[in-house]
Image (tube, one colour):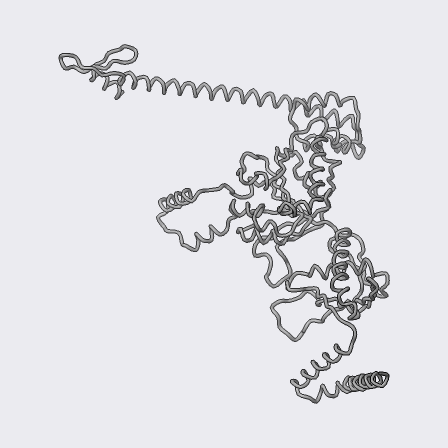
Length: 541
């Protein structure tokens, strides 16, 4: 037994010596052997090294199968190493991220980082692959391709692949969420991004809106109901999966201008810690482009379409209407329209069907934890199919400012919670419709007051503005009443004239009878008798 082991050790030692000799003389061989043989020898040396080494390697590239998009796994590894292992590294790299205002510390390239998991020791090697400068490529890169190499003993293969790598992914994503700067996205115009660049369909800036539900001017009961609904949605991933629904929710914010619809969206984003995607429909050419935009959004996000009734024409039209319009256009224009122009016009529109699929179709189930918000000043103008339950699950009316909402504004702008003028303001707010934006504008200190805020002057100015609005509203109501009365009078006059005309016709066609002498007469419902000739003359006139 001992002799056999000694023989095996001797064989391994001999093989290892031969391998070392090959490595020492490899530069000489590399310069004097043909390219084909050199490639074969390289492959054999790599195989032999891999066979003899007890360590396995896993490479995680910065760009995976998607050529122009950074790998989510690579970003998770980068965040994990920076958080869990950076303190043990000897070489670090400090940078200020595009979306962060604090210094970010990461492990420098070519720096070994050691980690342990489940009793196994794991080594990480951040590195980069230099570009091939002598190769002409139509896919330029902004910098060198980076990658992470993971090294571990082969006896820990199952532990690393089945447990450690999922652990790194989960922890890295959690660190990214905790440290990330939330972003405000807008969609790029079609054709603005080159297919050979990394610029995507969305551009973004840091989201820094300060609005919160504490500063939102809204009735407390309505505010609490919205907060409860948002909390339930955020914590209901398993519930949505159990009932077979995509993890998304729709909100319709409707009401007059200046009632705080955009502020409500910002407060939602700050409460949930979500990114915001401001979708401009007029910049979307086709339904296909709309689906691409949705696919490129991430989880934990709010997708917003503001003033949807004004963005594009989303009126559902029947095919018969389209044919009628087409025939009308052909009658009006003797010059036929080129087929390419027709196709271009039809392909450059987002349809109601496309938007419905965007909200509630199969593509809407790609990903999860998304909120879709529509805003409008005129809810009645929207197609009922667009705002039904299941698409816009919650309808929130953003109304005029009442006393409870005013108290929030007074606290935010003036720092007062009680005042002698509050009673008068409460009475006026119950009588006058004024938006929270107008109330807030009147609470702001005027330029003549300097930097010091005078609550008495601001509240007195608000009362004056409310009284002025009350007078203007009364005058507008009086003018409207006079116009309605005039319209009713004109309508009554037209109806009377129509009735008189109809009466004349009725008088000439009530009853026909013939006398013994053969004369034909007409008897009306009023008992008047005319000859047929006389009745005919009346009908003509």
